[in-house]
Length: 366
Image (cartoon, rainbow, N blue to C red; front, side, top):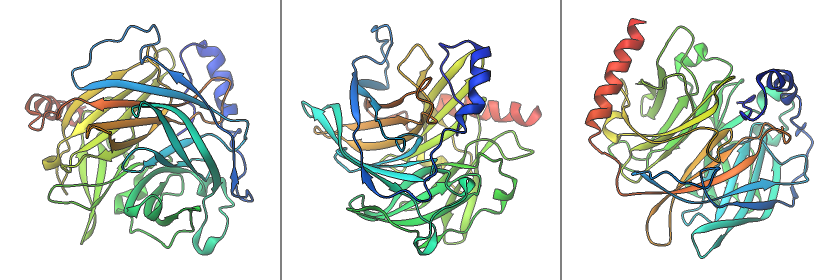
């Protein structure tokens, strides 16, 4: 999704610049696969003033601000990482893929992105995606194998669809097929499918889960869908409170983290990370959970749209977030942020469940 800009510029200036940001995407229909240079600047603390606030759920590891002279670098909206967190595959809303290797300092803090290559996403039979509305890739999830040799689901908005794409050492190949869409997809807004994950455990292990960024037309609650033997079935996601869902990642037990983002002219960008319990992710269900992180422009955030979960060297769960700069380098950044999940989230989530159910009732009443 486009047009999220930092709070450090006046609202008038933001309004003047935002429409232009949509015009900055490169035309990728004829681009060739190529290596590009990417420079990384370390982010030492999550708080911009250097004074970290304790978080009982997450521990800050480190982050990077990524820049490149290539006009093809930007718009990163979906992220895959290898199990050890070292190999990266990302997709851009300009219809591109990127691969690279994350180098770490002391095995824990990211310090560089190396061996970076970019290429164009393709249509069936390897044809180019010629229309801008067909290129808007927003999420990627591993369907099978690994990111060096496997398959991935990629979700697109505007022309809403989810395709199955091969992964290999050369990048992302042409799709082999597209999935059956939920019947409700006809009521999606232009910012449709924004988040994907494959459940890593639980009773629906291996199932694809997708989330719409915003409520469907005529609805107030968010929706997700889970693909099973009978096709995609919906479930409710209450309590998002004006945020959009921008990505998702499954934990080993089949629960899911969702990344949420909100932008308002006089507030700037805010993000949240929420944990949805495995038991609540089911057809016809109501997905509930607890908020692990809330952050605003006082923190080192940007237009965060990509989320991945890996294991660290000590077996800890590492959460990686990445931003979409909308190809608007004057006002926005590509950042890669990492946190350690401290212990297990509240599996029962009783207090948050009650709050979510109350919010859901209020949303329906309004």
